[in-house]
Structure formats: structure tokens, C-alpha cells
Length: 94
Ligand SMILES: [Zn+2]
Image (cartoon, rainbow, N blue to C red; front, top):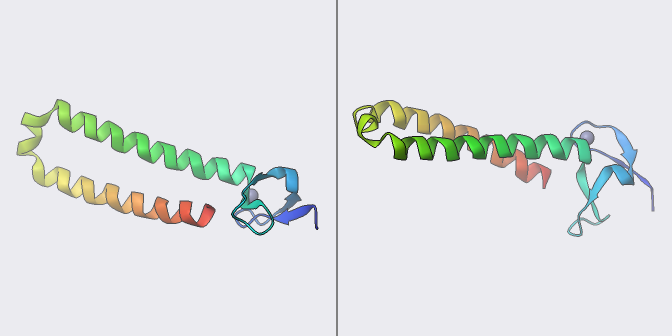
């Protein structure tokens, strides 16, 4: 078996040590190198943190926000689109 692998994200050929193990894959390694995987996970965490923050913000400011409902539903739509894009990216990375 080859001891190098092509990363699907940065398209660099790196040593197997640069890829996390993934038993679901034929060669036991992720399709993304560790560096690219970390970037993808970081993006994912930031997006999750932001939605958790918005949830808390809405809970804390319920009265005011009832008036600004139209504004928030448009913000929510934006958030959903961002999450969809990120989910797609994570599925690609998995
Ligand atoms: Zn990479």
C-alpha cells in the first residue's frame, strides 16, 4: 500500500501521517489532510457557536424581538443558508 495520499481539499500529496484515521474509508484514512480537516472543523464550530449565541440572544431579548420579528426571520433565513453550505462542506469532508 502507498504511504502517501492526495488531499481532496488542498490537492497536495502528503504522507499518511498527515491524514486522520477513518475506518469507514477503504484505505483507513480521511480524504482531507489534518490541516484541511481542522479548517473545516473550525468553520463548523464557529457557525455552531454563532447559532447558539443567537438562540441565547433571542431568549434574553424576547420582548424587543417580537417587534422585530420580520427582521429576525430574514436573519434566520441567512443563517439557514450558511448552515446548509457548511453541512454540505462537512459531508464532503467526512
Ligand atoms: Zn489538505
